[in-house]
Image (cartoon, rainbow, N blue to C red; front, top):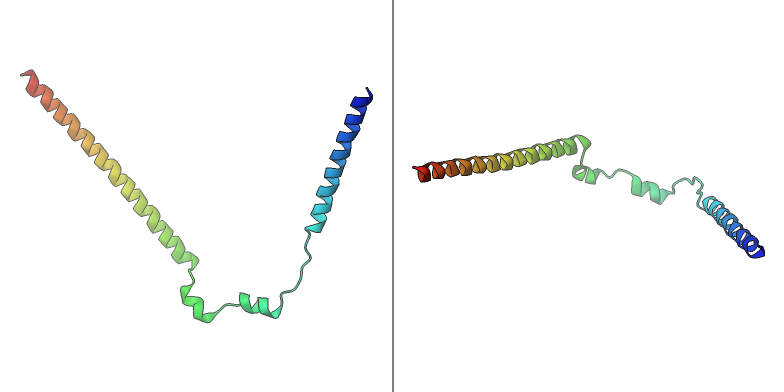
Length: 102
């Protein structure tokens, strides 16, 4: 009985210590707001010479839409080709049966 009591107190000790570390870790990871320095502000500032290389949302959206449409067209074309081959094969099979039956 004492063995079980010791195990349960040991387990509760580990549980309580793990809860303490989780709480203390969350406090250590909290950061305080610090204003950006001159260097950081200069790095984040917009550079006019790089403006022509920037992609804008509207053009990216159009390009994505064109890619989606082209993908659908290619998939539809592949499905159509598979359908045509299947129909031609079935017609050839029917002609062979009709020629073989006569």
